[in-house]
Image 1 (cartoon, rainbow, N blue to C red):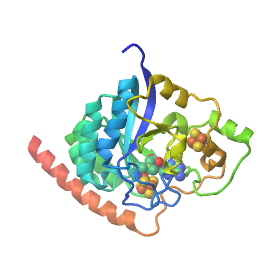
Image 2 (spheres, protein in one colour):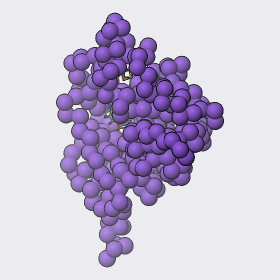
Image 3 (cartoon, protein in one colour):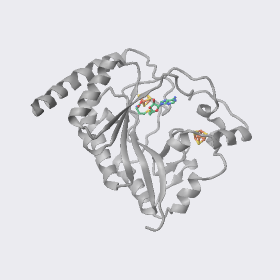
Image 4 (cartoon, rainbow, N blue to C red):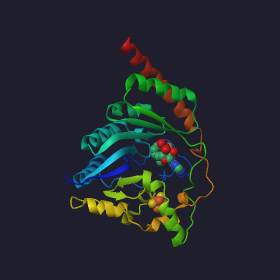
Length: 270
Ligand SMILES: C[S@@+](CC[C@H](N)C(=O)[O-])C[C@H]1O[C@@H](n2cnc3c(N)ncnc32)[C@H](O)[C@@H]1O
Ligand code: SF4
Ligand code: SF4
């Protein structure tokens, strides 16, 4: 292939369901739109194949949800199929860490596990470190704390064109959260999650590298940028706040499950 184009970070969501209900979820859970119109694994891999054939390569491809570990079989099928496309140098799962059972079958396909730490303690993280060392030493474990808080997502505000352009020019999300869903490439996950499909690039076998480059490198802000509260520099909101004690309940179950896995893996080594 003569010409290649690298997207440094690309995200795909395999489900809109989640084990948590974080206030201000940046993926709009529980109102996240379905990330696929049909069967998600087939649809995502078809879209990635289109990009690959056009000459796109990805530095790090993240599988998210909702919560991607909520359905272990789906995550296994997705991680295995995405690895087979060979589009990404590195495959990552981003998880809230509370259903490790759903991760187990996918560890062989991924390079990195990012756990977003919402209100659980060191005991669970220590179990993860031990489990990864025993079961998947090739997987890098990254912990994502949100101690400073999250960007507000729900406020309804609009800025003028000059400010929308300034937000677009300095946008963190479009450098880190390019997204593929519903057969389209999106500048950022926010535009995808707000179902602004008309602001995405439809992917088809006719899509060229120039189409992708022209879309991602367009100089002028998109309509969604004018209402983009995450980029407005507003006061941050607390991260990962739940309506009830579900984190404590899921955390206890996760620790029990990890303790069993660790003792089985240790017994296999001895
Ligand atoms: C939407 S979550 C999906 C994956 C998984 N459920 C999780 O929470 O890690 C992906 C990432 O977005 C971050 N995130 C969610 N809401 C956010 C917000 N309002 N501002 C900034 N980051 C946010 C999360 O902390 C997480 O690292
Ligand atoms: S864990 Fe929280 S941030 Fe992640 S998708 Fe679920 S509700 Fe959103
Ligand atoms: S809507 Fe525009 S400014 Fe907001 S995250 Fe997306 S690209 Fe950036």
